[in-house]
Length: 627
Image (cartoon, rainbow, N blue to C red; front, side, top):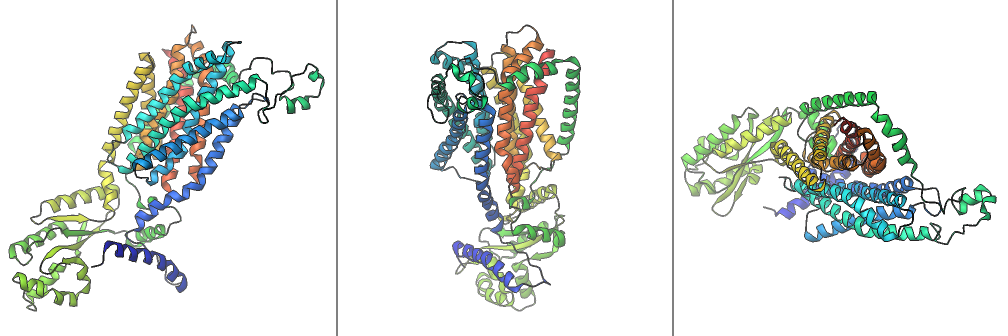
């Protein structure tokens, strides 16, 4: 027979020629859709290329958002370079981690193409917290030197940033324990990227802050770096001139930095609004509704992946699957049953054993016994009619050409050397396999029956690799989520010295996971290996939002609970909001992707960030004031 490479070459040339031939025929009366055994895999791997153009859009969005959200209306202190460098450090992290992983030979699978979007969104969060702490430290001490200010910035920001990085990285490295190699690759790539991201934020970005500060001290223009003169007489000049050359109408450069307007909003309006007792009641009711909705969703969750989702929307396999559903939905996969070793087919007992096994397989409720195809049955029929004699080995092997003359296609079912039959196969046809549950049962029953056979049998179909996924997906997901949540709890206990605070963080994790799993169902996302990765990530992120806020609440020096909540929100509300928006901007372009994998990734990340931010900025502050 032909070698594997030749077979593959034939399939590939078939895939290239068929569209050309079909276009040439141009027939209106007949519609042809086609599919080969390589199609599934190739289309799945082809998805990655479709995302690459989206990556540049993400970079642009993230940089724009970072610049705008850190902007000050002053030509000296407008933080443009700070924001750009923050995004660059996240980009460097992607490069370093991918380089390292590819160097170590970790396979680059399709799901890994999601990683850069995620890292950009998250890497920028750390930067926002650093900038917020730096501006905080500058307001506390008027005339302090750069060293002590940077020390204070690191003292404040480093804890928060370390906790979030640790929890995210832990979530990913726990994700590597799964049974799915694709999930493992993804988790390794993203986990290492987060480690690099942390290193770059702590080293590279700290240095950038200082350089930026020096140029501010010397009143240099942000773009040209030329010193901007601060004259006494400039107040008389027009407001326009000042806006262009100095950056503000008033002579602000000699005054200390004012608070960012968003921080003032959190302090003056947002905090007091949510500490009002009627609003608190409303929040509790809202939370009840959220919990009810998610628990209902969790009971409705569907498992299993629709195979057409593995290809991109414009792939040639989609119409094939559609036609298959429309006209042949009664038929399931045609299963190949292989006799894997060389057995004595001519021996009566062996022969009866094989027949018995075939009948047992045909006895399964999902199999239609009239549609089986077995070379051995045809051969024995010919012998029964007295056309040939197959009573011993020599006759059995020498008469095979007669069988192949009658049915030439059987040549592919027998793997024959000079005087042995190494292996052979027959086919059984499954029917009424409609849902993931059916697929799971079918696979289990086929394997059980094949195991009990006296002859070594193996059942195979290219789609079985996906059915196998369903067998372990639920337990794997639960195991991962529980282990990850436990790890988060331990980390937060070690880093946040307050046990009450840790309880809140754990509560937030559980609550966000339930929410994401529940609402995922309402958004038509099934539980498969792709959404499973996302649920594990979700744990890492849900910690981020709530840990910051609850830590600020617990360490606050204010007297009443309400004042503490307001202080925590004014300090960290804006960075948390910035972080949430930047992460969503990082993945939002994936919503436009042509492939289901990337769209699912967007949907789940969106839910995680939405619910995480909701907990961090609304539920947790309100609940903290009760205790």
